[in-house]
Image (cartoon, rainbow, N blue to C red):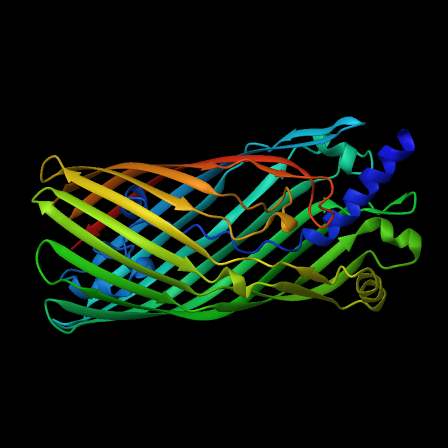
Length: 422
């Protein structure tokens, strides 16, 4: 029985080592408290500073210089349980409570009556997980000090221009300068009975993309918007370490490179104002995740490269699928100064079961959002809350290219915004 258990855990460790360089598609997809509180259904409304992200055409309607800041604290709470029909429960783990900060700052400046410029700095992607190492000892070669953490994030700088063709029709475009990071810490697996110990990789990279938007307002009741964000290929470079490799006469460290792509995003939205104080919004947002079919990592050290190529761990098959989000939002102005907001969206996961793992998992999320706003003399103060409910995922032991087990995840994201028109 003990031999069977060790064989199973060793196999899981080797499989996890090959799969954990995979998940690079965790977009936040909600920036700005007002937009987030309305379920991220904002492409057709596009009328505050966060429109630089949602639909750059929206800034064409700004007649005042505007500065805005948005910040959020993303708090994931996950569980992972691995059970064998004969060996019983091998792992019953929870994520460690940890904050993942994200945000946006934007400045909008009218140049002429019809031409408006803007600059946004924001985090379109950013998430991760940290697990208690003592709870994962069974899949860490018995060691209770192996760290299991992940962090993936991107910071985008977006200079923007928008032009008001008429009161009904506006267009806009942004250049997206992307800086990304991708860090992983996990168990390195084993070579026979020899533990390879802690595996760490830290990578950063740059990429370019663009966003194009249009806004059409045929009447005071209706507004329609569309946004296209191009794919952005990021060339990562960094280092990987596995300290116990020295016992096999292999260097403990290797430089690594990897090209990853944040895929194309296409969205359409409508805003409807049935009465003076009520605004309803709806968006359909599509992401071309299918573009990510495999990821190739190059190890600069000759011995590392030979080892990874021979084991097939330099290439990770993804087989992701495209995903479409459906979003709805509402805002009601109780008075000229106070507003309440609510929203809902469904966020399907792009990853398939075959690529599931504990560090960068993907879930089907049902998301509820709420918020309030206070406006006075050009100043707008806002607070919001987002609650993401992940659908449980069960990966069978027979699915050998994944990390078998039962996964659950919920995320809460309190946030605030402040903006001023002057």
